[in-house]
Image 1 (tube, helix red, strand yellow):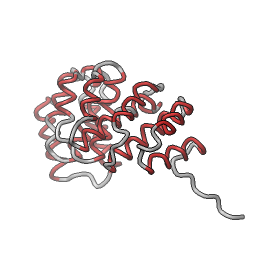
Image 2 (cartoon, rainbow, N blue to C red):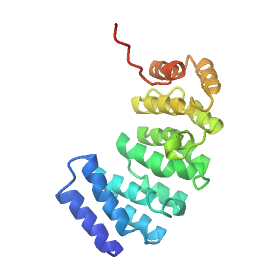
Image 3 (spheres, rainbow, N blue to C red):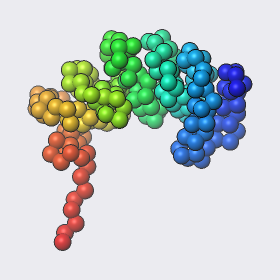
Length: 222
């Protein structure tokens, strides 16, 4: 199917009969990925951009169609990433964008660090969360990460005093993702910034350092 008819088809499906759950949606997304596997990367990105204004399903579909295309992610530029990340206003969209597209692009040199830091300075809580969550792609193996202490901690330093709940949770995630690679560096960061960090961050990251888990369940009494 050609780009325009397919975009219209996807929009129709996701607006008129939206999937009831993530599993049902992902079945659809895989079917559409199969249809576009031979498309040039720039056309896949254009298809993604045509879905952004639809609803959350449209945005998630756009991101995954690009991420799971063999050449889609490699063709992303700073300009196209800014277009794809425009008007994010919920944590699901932010995390998908940052983990699947922006974070990997940053890791691989297609998105400059200055852009990530610009998000961290934003008055928009979702842009600040985007900047922090980009570090997940540096450190989580499932997202292609292999550990990047310097860039992760620099991001966390820049928002260390932020008390917005969405950013606080993202900082905790960023630091916990770095623990397997360099627990000493994370421990030192907690110590250095103890007075500035939100209690939630200190609690969750210290739990990760001690137990390897974010919230270990207490053992049942025998």
